[in-house]
Length: 512
Ligand SMILES: NC(=O)c1ccc[n+]([C@@H]2O[C@H](COP(=O)([O-])OP(=O)(O)OC[C@H]3O[C@@H](n4cnc5c(N)ncnc54)[C@H](OP(=O)(O)O)[C@@H]3O)[C@@H](O)[C@H]2O)c1
Image 1 (cartoon, protein in one colour):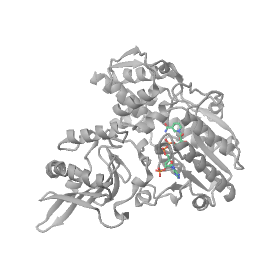
Image 2 (cartoon, helix red, strand yellow; image 1 turned 120 degrees about the vertical axis):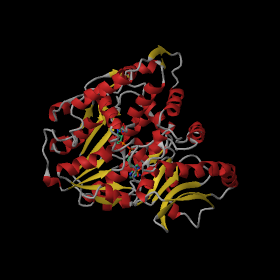
Image 3 (tube, helix red, strand yellow; image 1 turned 90 degrees about the vertical axis):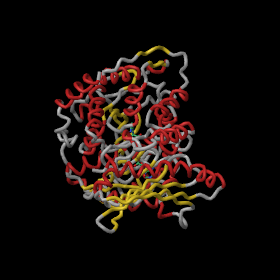
Image 4 (tube, protein in one colour; image 1 turned 180 degrees about the vertical axis):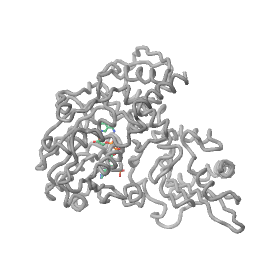
C-alpha cells in the first residue's frame, strides 16, 4: 500500500508541482501597475498568507493588515508595508486603508466560536466598508462562501452571505467570489479529509454524505483572486468559483482513499446528527471542534456553482478534486506547507497575552537545565523539531493524554500538529502550544493554548557558558490568580519534573 501511495505522489511530481513556484505565472490577465498599493486584510490567515507572495511576485506593492505588531511579519514580508488594525475598531481601519485603490477582504472570525463569529464578522465588514468609503477606496475584493441563498443556510454560510450583502449595499464596488470547500495543503477541509481517511477503516455514512459539493483547489482560488484584480470589469459583480468536478462528500473521501491506496468500507448509518459527527471529527483530526462544527454545519446544503461566468472571463484549467488532494499531499510530503488553518489566533483572543505583557512576574516558574559541549546551532535545531509527528521526545504518551483531555473539553488538544516538521516561525502552532517568540538560536518561547486555569508558557533556551559549552534549559512559567489555577500547578508539578528533566536530555541527545 505504501508503495502505491508513493507511486501516485510521484505521478503528481510529473505534473510539475516542484517547478511551479508562483501559482499565477500562467494567468491570462496582466499586471496593472496603475493600482498602486493593494491592501490585504486577513493577510495572516490561510488564504491571505498565500495571496501576499503571489501579488508581490507579480510586481504589486502590497500593504498587509495585521491585528498585532510583530517582528515576524517584517521578516516574513520584507517587501510589504505593514498596517496594524483590528476590523472591529473602525478608527484603526482609516490609517490602514488610506491611499489604497483596491483592498482584499479575507477576514473571518470563525475561530471565536459558533455563537460569536456571525456578529463579529458583520461588524468587521461594516466597519471595513465604511472606512473604505471614507478613504475613497475604488474596489474591494471579498472571498466568501458558496451556498444557495434561496435555501436556509447554515450559520456559517449565512454569515458569509451577510458579509457579502454588507459590501454590496455599500458605496465601494465590490467583487465577490464565492467558494465551497478549499482543498490545499494546510486547509482545514483537507486536513479533516486526510486524517479521517487515514484513521478510519469503516465509514458509517450519514444521509447528508450524499450532498453535492464543488471543491476548489487552493491554487485556483489564488488565481481567481489575482485574476479579478487584473480585470476591472469584474468590479461590482459576484462570481461562483469551483473546481472541475462536483462530488458528494462520500465520493471525496473515496477519492482520497484511492490516492492513498487505502481500502475503506462505507456503510449507511442510521445516525445523521451533525453535532455528533463534527465532534467525532474534531477528536480524530487536528481541527478543533469550533471549526469542524462551522464547516460541517453546512453539509446538508449543496454547495455548487450556480453560474460559471468567471471561467470565460479568466480562462485557465480548473483542477479536479483529485488533483487538488494530490497537490496538498505532495506539499506535506515535501514539508513545504506555507500557511495553515491554525495560523489565525485561537478562540479567546485574550489568550494571546504575551509573557512580557503580563502584570508582574509569573506566579510560578520551574526550570530544568544541563550543560553540554554541543553547539548552540545543533541544540536549537533539535529544540525546533519538538511536537507534531516527532512527538515530545520523552513521555509523548503523557502529552497525548493531556491533549486528549483537552479535546474532550473542546479545547485545541495536541493533535493540531505543526505546519512544518523542520522549521518554526512566530505564530506557528506546535500541538497545543503556539510560538510566541524566537530569538536567534538561543530562545524559543511557546504559549499554551490548551484549556488551563491561567496562562502558561514553555521556554527553551541555549546560553553559552565558560569553556565553550552551552547551557540548555527549559522553563515553565505560569500566571494564575484563582484557587483552581494554583491547584492545577501543584497537581502537575511532579509530572513537570518527570517530563522536562528528560525532555532536555533527549533534545541534547538528538542534536547533531
Ligand atoms: N479556508 C477555506 O477553506 C475557505 C473556504 C471558502 C471560503 N473561504 C473564505 O476565505 C476568506 C478567508 O478565509 P481563511 O480560511 O483565510 O480565514 P482564516 O485563516 O481564519 O483567517 C482569517 C483572517 O482574518 C483575520 N481577522 C479575524 N478577525 C479580525 C479582525 N477583527 N480584524 C482584523 N483581522 C481579523 C485573522 O487575523 P489574526 O491572524 O489576527 O487572527 C486572519 O488573518 C473567508 O472569507 C472565508 O469565508 C475560506
